Image (cartoon, rainbow, N blue to C red; front, side, top):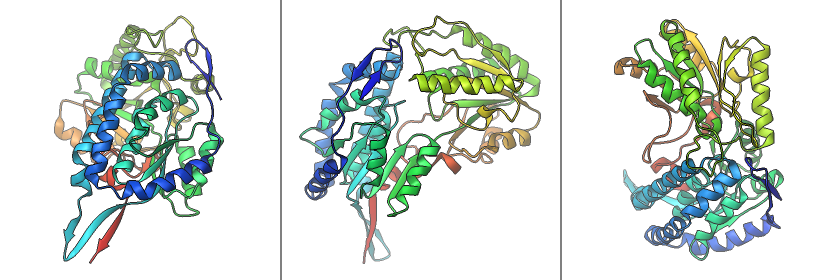
Length: 436
């Protein structure tokens, strides 16, 4: 398979896995041995894997940036978050998997068998390992199908597991992902688009495979009249630009009270001019290219659609290179615009005025998605009141999305099924067995 650097457009060839059925057989063979280990033994082995993983930090950061166009400083941050989540699971695995006594019965958390982790390209280390580590700690063996856009990164981090833990990599295109879903695995953890998540859920229903789905979002930031407008504009614009907007929980709609609407737009425009675009391997770069030509064309179609329906834009000129795409702030966006209905997955930021709290909540909830949201105000009680009315998996006050380990992660409505990162995330990969 061919992999294109989204900045230089250099093409690298990567060998594909010959047979996922063969991988499954190996994973089945290893399951009996791995699941028989105590949790303490598995923690010890995965601690050794973590040490080998850390030693690959510089190599992995470079590969992430080369394959998906993420600025190398952000790639480094991804690795830091990965280590943090990994260490959290190692620290708490025995506690979370310890049998519980309940009214004369004992509740056990036993391994399922072979499970599949299917991961995207936008966080090609953090997101697969968010599923792999808890699945292995629970006693399962794992087949991981990484994105066809970031196979070299996946191959590199998987080497840390060799000889220590049963992780099997399925390197190939979209059809190979479909093959993995059809395998008789006991569970599938998928992170990616809602459309693909639905197709996986449909296929999994044939044999009632367990599914853990972290899907798309159309996340709203609600800016109230009393907010620190300059600070909100800075944080919101930079959030939308992070990873070139290719983040499931990025801010994709800004709802601003009409009394401070123009002030917010003016502040956002100033922030937009400060962002540094360029080579992902340059540590000064804040925003690199979109991941592929397909993604570049997709974001352009969303932008063209909004403009054709009357939206006005604020953007800047950047030096063209690879799939670089400048961030765009949009005003006067009609509700019929695609970017208010579907996830563009790019640096497009529509700003929408509202007049009342109830109107803001109604607009925020008027979508099939429900991943995250944020409320920007100096009034914490008002923020909590609004948060209680938002149909999403996570709401933050004067900040957006990313939370440290120990906080459940997942969405509502068509943004996902199940939770990750915590006790709940570890137990997603277990059979809750009662012995009485």
